[in-house]
Image 1 (cartoon, rainbow, N blue to C red):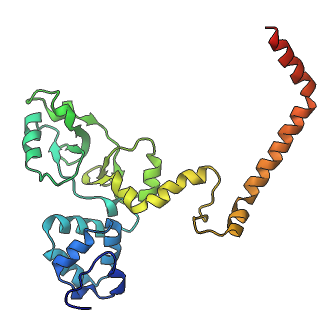
Image 2 (image 1 turned 135 degrees about the horizontal axis):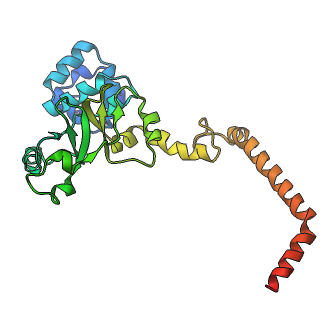
Length: 259
């Protein structure tokens, strides 16, 4: 490695030891690749190096990566991030606006998460609703109550498929007691598992999970042959039934002309 060479998503495969790179360069690299790749790489480091690196990272990234590394790969918790705006249900619309203005403009989020005094999620605040209520309106009267909440320990793909058709930009993530621990954005799931999610539509029409774009013709025929054979058999059966009742069908069509 030369002194002028910079670690990037195009050349990182060449290096086994990332400890030779300064923290700022590692941070730029990790923020340029999908989060799940960052976590997989971090898990391959020695524990001491991970702790030192995370301590030197910017606070918002360190907090997010530390949270994700606590959970097993493939779980909801792995892809969640700290909720930017958490509001007590007894606060007012005016309080919500004040808290919103404190958040950096580069943070991406859709809802304010509403919790009770025990930090249990009770609702989400849609920001357009802020403009339709008086400043002294209590948040528990203005929020959407009982939102879909995800469990941090659950498998993220299975969970995402279960809520198909109910997808919203982000979901509150809770523990077994319903207490808020983070937020999962749907876009992060798509970034990490987009191929598996898109494969669900293929499974609905008979494609095998083992079948991919690089599958050979022989493998495709072997996997899809039974489906094709069933389709051919049913087509011949349908044709035979139509042939048997052809005279009756012709009479019905002829009678229909006089109606």
